[in-house]
Image (tube, rainbow, N blue to C red; front, side, top):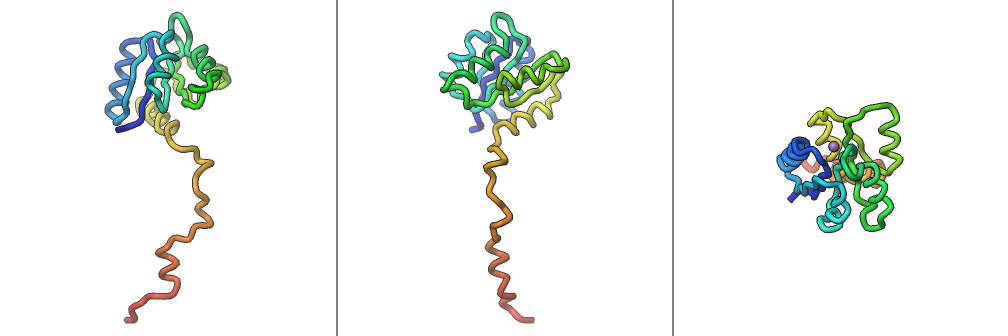
Length: 149
Ligand code: MN
């Protein structure tokens, strides 16, 4: 089973689009239509990623992002913000609130899935240092071929 993704989006068509797309890529999705339920649902579902619409009634995705990042239990979960406004400074405000990723509407489906994969992938800084590793097959062949022609 794929990773669990909580999708917080008030627009029914966008919510269906995101959830269908993520399911088609093997992810387990949990839709949340009302931002006021987002934190409780995140605690119950324990997702590996949250996709967060910014423009919502009652509570904005920006406020929810700040609340999640102030919560010891929820703060480690990466947040991918989705916003209809691509105005200058929006990405800065969203990142300042603590979101790890940002995609502007209208959504390119390839970019959307690419951003999801990037956020679910382990951090590159934790990758193994490849320079010091000697592949075993090279070490074996260092003594020369076993068969002579
Ligand atoms: Mn919205």
